[in-house]
Image 1 (cartoon, helix red, strand yellow):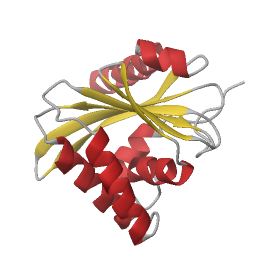
Image 2 (cartoon, one colour):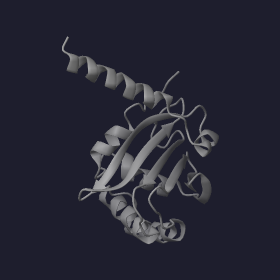
Image 3 (cartoon, helix red, strand yellow):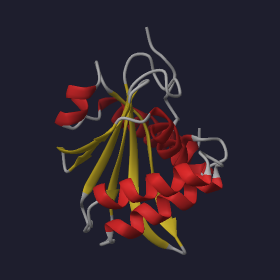
Length: 180
């Protein structure tokens, strides 16, 4: 075996082991039964790193909107909360989520919720199956939106097959299957 192949194999094993050994943030552990990191990846825009993302799931894995999960974004730069809301609603339109009227209402709700962020700020969203979404900022509760259609649209930005970031979706869903 060539040394580079052996090193590559060891690095793959170490990466997978770190994926399984990742410790969930405290709020994630409160929201999910035995949370585990499904996957992680980064989002860039015109070569600028915007955020890194992690998808946390429970024993039932990722099951669309039928089981709880947590998606956490760690921002790599300062961004205005209103701009985050506007970009979010644009992505909802991209995946054809909701009607125009729904997206307009969701935009106003997100503008009221989403804070300005700086490098290192963590924003997390918890899917509440059949109920909506709960948001956290740096592990502290931010807001709850009791609207299942909004929750599907919001998480669809990253997890819908029509997402504008398919590589990130694949990375997030890497280990998303249910476990006994």
